[in-house]
Amino acid sequence: MVGLQHPFQCLQYVNRQPTGLSDVLLATAGRELFSFDVSSGQRLDVWPQPVDAPSADESSGATTASEGQGPPEKRRKLSSPAGGEGDAEPESEAKPKESKKDDSNSWTNIPLLTVAQSKYAVIMTGEDKCVRVFSLAEDGKLQQLSARTMPKKLSALTLTPDENTILVGDKFGDVYAFPLIPSADYVKTQPQAKPYEPSATNLTVHTKRNLESLEQQLKQAALSKTNPEERVVLNFEHQVIIGHVSLLTNMISVARPADANVGARNYILTADRDEHIRVSRGIPQAHVIEQFCFGHTSFVNNLCVPSWETNVLISGGGDNYLLVWNWLENQILQKVQLPVSETDVTVSGIWDVSFSPAAGDVASVQTIFVTLEGSTQLYCYSLENGNTLTLKQTLDLCGNVLDLAAIDSKGTIVVSVDTLRQPNSTTTWKSISQPPLETFRVSAGKWAPIEDSMVLSINSEGTSIVPEGLDQKKQTELNDAVYGLAKLRKRDGSDD
View 1 (tube, rainbow, N blue to C red):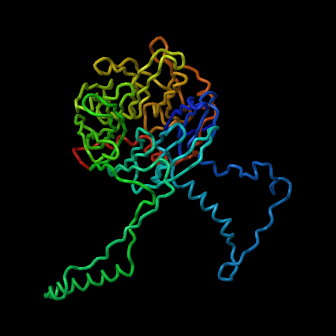
View 2: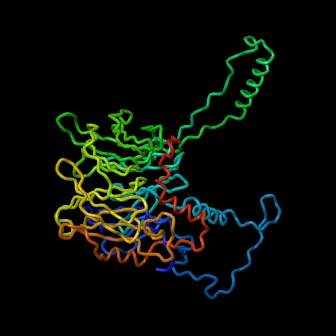
View 3: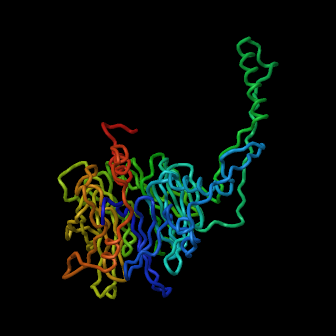
């Protein structure tokens, strides 16, 4: 690999063995979404296709002007619609170029990724606030099915337990729900704004100043009738189901089986910048708040409910500790001090990994992985009897840990590391790039690094090159796209 390359910011394993198809690893790097074959590491597809990718005619072997037919013929001047002459191209030729330009400048990173029903990929693209759904074909090719632009920047993305509904949270605290696959029958409704009519009249107003004010109001009302302002409405089926009064940082959806006290029910757990964890019922009762879980003193941005113990919640954020909850009872079971001496640390990831004894010929594995923002260390915890966390091991990687995916078919985990910044730094850049993935497997009761053919193949091909000679402003923007959690911390008691 030559030059610096974008790291994999998000990883998602797609288990397709029940359908008889090969498993796929989805990953985002920079502004691109990749799909890889898990067995071989072969790159199956990348979206969006590079701008300089060959067209269908070129890829089919069609001869171009540069391949032996001499220079291209001079473009003929075309008449403008008004009858004059100009150098403009026909509209049909100009539009593709404009769309390519707009498409390449609309976002620079893909910070959120999830998988639905093992055949759909859902991503959130950064600056354009857009949620995109892709179908994953049998050969691993990606095809965009829908693109829904939200009114505000998004900070959380998940699915309902049945994986038919997308839940997104924005930085103003609202949670939206909309179907995974848009309905063809949906018709956008445009509410009519009621024209403003002053309640006062010249019969009820007598002073000179009030009469002048009334005259201005009447003029404004007449103007609004002649130039009505159309209210902005999302042009797809959706509903707002939850509202926070603070920036929403994380969200998970949990299905609870029936027990002696209550029947089977879905829940939505949300966290925000104001140290709150809210437990709400699932759709269609999301307006019902079961309780708030209070215990953190700084923002909360990571929520994890282990798949093998769904009554337990592990939370972390701007505190130098984790909290283990019985979230249904609003009870703190344990306060787990992180093995760090610094006070201003940020938990950037909590993952639960569970392997059955048959997965990759390994013993049964149940591990909670935790990492901190800008750290090369990956902490391995076990959830012991009594639902208490115990630190079992600390893994040191070659770069800052960004994301983790468990490969069930192999009994391994794949960890993406930062290829741009120096280890344990969020601002200092490297001069030489490094492989973006590392892989581990349990051996003799401990997680140990291994060589995996999939990871070797992906690392050898790399991702996309970061342009050389980036100025300090561009570097800062790329840093903030990956390491922005520390900005959630309130300083000097400020509530801003």
